[in-house]
Length: 496
Image (cartoon, rainbow, N blue to C red):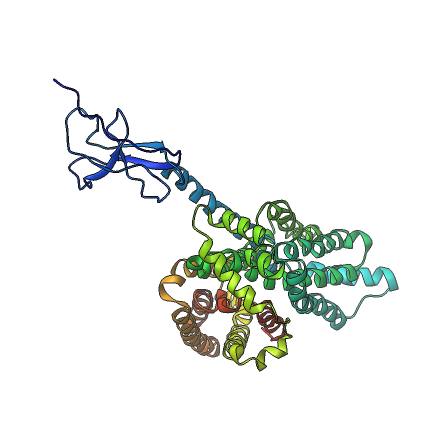
């Protein structure tokens, strides 16, 4: 029996093209190239592969398994499928690590420092009174103790406003990544002040520390959406931006958990509780330097095309980044002769007026919707519903968990349903549950089951907030630092 005819081969190159031996008789095209002494088909369609195609018939003895084979051949210019898959996995891991590294020291810190101050309220008030007694020999009146405590709490949003004012200049001069790293200086300083405040006998150190962590939260809440919005691919930008809300809700829950009496909620452990904000800051300092800078910043603000291309390749993996690089070049050309605008100048720009108006409306609505007020009244409502005092802290953890759950859900459905549906649906549900909550509070003294309805409305209201308004950053303005900072100013200026 004669040997089968030798297949033609005219490949002079050495590219890593994928050669897949597709099973014969299963829809394989008759036009293909065979490797010498095997029956494997070169299905490489790359233009750089000069392997000639020859018509192949289903001849016996070619050694092609009916199950198909997969191997590699050296043909110029392409990557093996295994290499492509590996690079895609690496690309996904780089983007995930970028999200986590930016979030753990960003909006996570905001939510964490917002919630941990609730657990040591009475302990810090007692410490303030004891400190004043040690200094003057007489106790501090109750109304002045309340005033000092109010200052400790309110200095956090005041620092956030200062941080929002710093965020724009920092993001432009230092870059998005370096701004987040430098921002941890405020966290480290605040943690030192918190940790030694009791030993130093100074409640003023607590006040200064709260101001500094507020500045850190103001910077990170503005820079983090910019960094992630400019680093994520278009098809994932909505979900990636929603991770800011996920980390904020995660920070709230972690602050509630760490503040439990069984952990750091003990009367003697409150300095450690406040100083624990150092842990996420150190995690960000250890991880973020290993990740790429924003490609947009590197090209448009720094003019470094090579660094931009390298960052895109790290973030996108083996995908073709030429189109995205060309878009950034066009944006760079359009911005070349323009100076940075002040926030109030954005309203004069006709091309941005509608976007800025929508930003102001969305930001104002989110801050004035009353979600933080519901959190503040939650413990009292739980007590009215008959929950024992020692169990109230666990019920409050449930409120933070509700927002965290809905933030995760929003990340999954935002690209399918769209931002408009989530916003309108969330606000409609909040209006409904807020109305029922008001009626339940009014009637809870006369109808026995009304306190339970009020408690249910709290969870429903928080779930409605998380699914819609809670994390929808205006993505179309993430590329404009001044616009994002304007949104940040609204967050800290308007009352909760």
